[in-house]
Image (cartoon, rainbow, N blue to C red; front, side, top):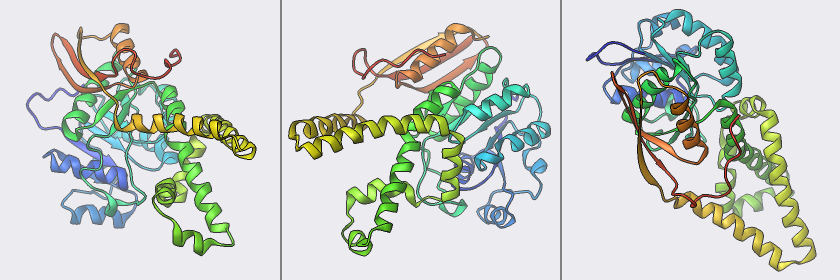
Length: 348
């Protein structure tokens, strides 16, 4: 995509809250030429005090850039994408960090931007918000979903993958937009609902102060994401409403099994269900992986795309991408054969 051999990458970040600010600070720490922009004048001034150029006009921040990260609130992404696309050259790679991907991917496709827009989602965050909460190492080691598309769009995916791995030391997970939204519904969005429900039930309890006085690690861990900005959470849940409700149904089914076992005094059933949960929890800390390398021809094709999507669907990730005139080489890690859970459903 970007054809400036030997020249440093020029980047811009639009929307400099927690995630955008962390992207901005990491790009600056890596020595890239980076500018930030935020609709809030006070936030732009904060960026300037941190030593990052932050023009007052969006068009000035993104002009002549090689890559632009769109990091504003979900409802603003389509409008911002159109504005940034109009203000940048055809070789500028565009990406976002939103927590849902289907809607913005379809929007970009309808406007002919698929060849240079790569939907993205770094899986990281805290219960704080704003540029003052940002940190240059927030995304280090994070799973960072990037959504590849067929044909010429693979060039933008390759270029951005190399940047994300090299600059952020993140694990790039290739995944189609619709599959991403299904996965994060259970991995991220339902946990926000459960955290809000648990914290809300405590707040409504007639013994509220006593409950909070005894709240220990299990309550704090279970309600951590309830400490985030409510508007941000609502935007995320509404943007992925159907998938989140479906995932919530699967969680409710397990809760119903636990409740039925508790009512019946069924110790074996309670133990079995919690053993199942314990195994899944343990898998977070210890997922053995094996390395692999794959090379594909310069123009990309169905075989390359199939490799990328199967890798993400199987719980694997990319930890390197090198493209040259003769093709592209990916280095990746994935679970050993037979080491995972049930096979993922077919893509499509």
